[in-house]
Length: 262
Image (cartoon, rainbow, N blue to C red; front, side, top):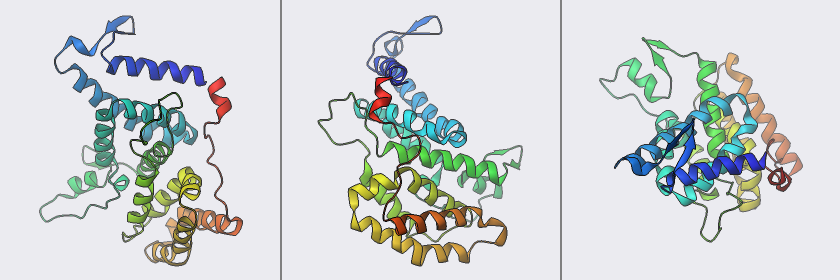
């Protein structure tokens, strides 16, 4: 509910503003310790990224309520936004976007960690689980760049708005594609913020969509084996449908004005 989300936002904002906040039966304040504010900013930013790789990866719609709270907090407390990006880029280098190259002397295990895989006791997480986590984090990022907290003063620009999404898309398409990962990330990103990018960039956006269809999808196909075609087929269908309809559908779960009346 919109009212519940406002409660969550107010509590976080009050804590970061130095006010006393009730939590789990105790009263806490960042003024209780010289590094209190820095610690809370760090843990809060980390928590938002964890929501992306956990909750959003399983429930795509949850990207929007989480993103709108973070967007509003970022506006009032830029430090949280900076640390959020640092956590996000470390956990999901594709959010930069960046495909780390393996340097000489880097162990396989260390390189897999650089690529975003979780490695425990020399065991690497399964590919499906890895892709799901990356998908959740990209969806959260794609939601953040288009949403603003509706009760802010709206005087300044979005702290990390759609221009960053446009840049992400352009940079992504300048990278050599990876099997599995690239198709999934592009589809996630376009499903979540394609509609907002279309409204903002118009004909320039459609040129990018044509480029994806004519030039980039064949390049993904060239590095994709027959067993990895699932994501690529979905991306192909999505781009084809959008170009045919000359429209990008609104993402599922987007917060409508009526949501804030609940």
